[in-house]
Image (tube, rainbow, N blue to C red):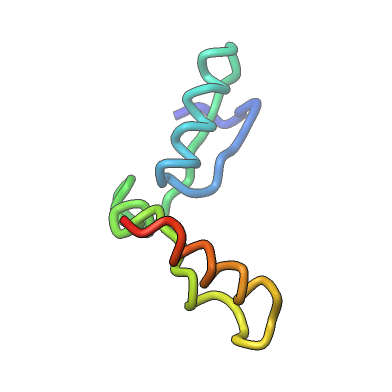
Length: 75
């Protein structure tokens, strides 16, 4: 194993691996650090969605906007 790298990426999820891949394509020597198996943590369980009523306080303008948006664009 090499002792020196141009770049170190912490996290072997979808984002970390994408960054490492792009760096390697550009000629950088890259080390990816992951505490468990690659792609088995948050990336495995991520749904890629935002809940309109989960991430805001009910009295905020952003919450009201999110609720209105959800009503307009039902899936």
